[in-house]
Length: 335
Length: 221
Image 1 (tube, rainbow over the protein chains, first blue to last red):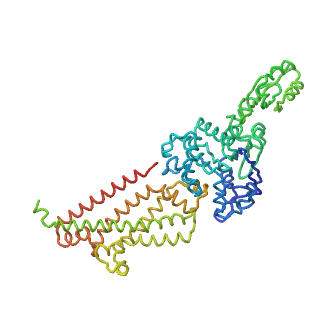
Image 2: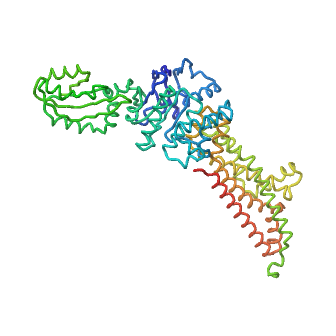
Image 3: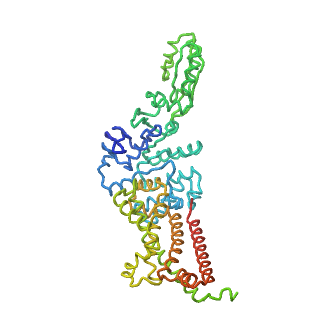
């Protein structure tokens, strides 16, 4: 468990303190995938670097599994860092070392592993990330996705309990992003590893995260389960992110709504109800006619969801809404 | 052909070439041994780097700049008392080496500093995140990553030392430069001058080619 207690960070620029992170309380549970989303400069990079103290905080305490890491000595801190893997947007592999040597590097630095242990562990990790054929290649001979797989294998070498991902998929194309995210999900499940990932893409959060914190200007403005934050965003910044990920232009959307007649509802289906033939039966029973203005059916991590915006005319609107709510559909009246 | 090169004493040329080789080789060795740690220290103590020690950087940088701003021909003369103290003579091959190192080491140190700056900050950060200490970051990440740049720096330093070594002929340093000055310049033996210059050109070409090959071999980018 990672606990932030009024943690803050500011930088000294020309003798003035510029805040990068305002005092923040936050708890990340063991074994969860925790997303931090925000625009560049929102402070998410700082936040993730506070967890392994690459950036020391200027105030507050960071407590990991009951230990206050902000009080660690230099030697304790180095030992602690072996317990926290990290992967990066630009991979940060050593260009002078082969794939195998890159993966072995953190184990060699630790100085507590025998040569045989390192060799076996490297082989195991190469197999795990699907790069067994590339062991003797140099990073420059690999594609972006393969480089990030090396990064992940390297981060896992010393069997950490926490994995930090700093925009790990931002330099990758959509297909590669998907396969890297799948790999992260798998190792989260297999190893029970806590993953903290920062990103500027809500889509990444939707696919892999359990919970998410949304950051804006050095503050966490919204935090909660991904399905809540994603389907019912409250803060304007969160709404921007959700719209962005669905490629919705909010102005266009307003114009579309104005053209429609009748009541406008937004229905949110989650889990099993997504697959039920609900709309037709409710329409028949209540005599309401509907047209679909916009919608999306997709998954949040492993849970299916649907979100439809409908305009309804005629019939018994009240009973239609009651029937939908009875079937576990979240109903919002937009107009 | 015989008449054209009548003044050229080939055995003498051979000895002078060997002397130049020794002067450049020894001074290069000591320049690298002294310059590499100075370059690493310059890099580490500079702003926003691992050690970030403005005072130490300032002092070190000042000393390096002073040595680099003195024209080499002056450095040769200024160094004489110190050289005599160090190895008993300021003449010959041995006497030329201390001033050559004094000129070569700071030059090489700056080249090392520059090639370390070329190493991606992200790699240093990643190595830190693995729990490495400063020594491990230097030897495990910084130097291996900067190796091609450092080898290129050694090549440039070696070539600079070839020309410095030739200059040391002025104060009786020995080698091809000495030959060129004593015979080619003072006795107007143009043929000796041409031969020594040709040999120096070949020497520099060989050094540059060898350096380029090594850089290519160690570049993995």
